[in-house]
Image 1: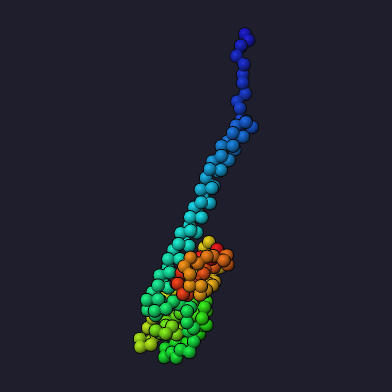
Image 2: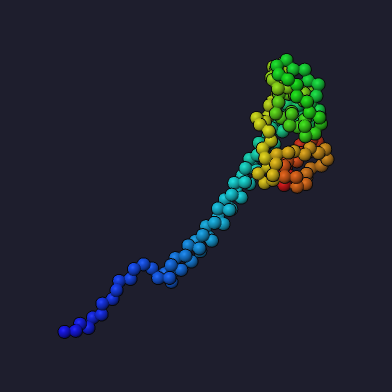
Length: 171
């Protein structure tokens, strides 16, 4: 007797069409997910920028409260230090960094060591200025324009007006 049933060989593996469908589905999922990671990176950079800006502005405000002047407005030269060494900086960016990173007296002169009678203020920043997360470096440009609404010049660092106390990212 002849059997009317045909014997079918069992299929081993996936067909090309099935593999293409899986690859297309994975590509669609990747296209949806990857931009979300990029946005998360941008959000993290913006958050770091906002935090750095707030911290530096707080340091500047505290310096202003204790010295009645903004850092960088006066030179920090000619100090005589009992504990530590004098740190000199000319008016502008050099004295801005010097006055925020070291102990200072009421005249804005800077010293590496504290002295309860003379150099009792600061330091206002523990380390150097942080790199601008939206820019490329940690340099600061100090200007004396004296007009609120300081505008960016695109140096990639920071910008400070020693007359108004305005501090911005310069990207």
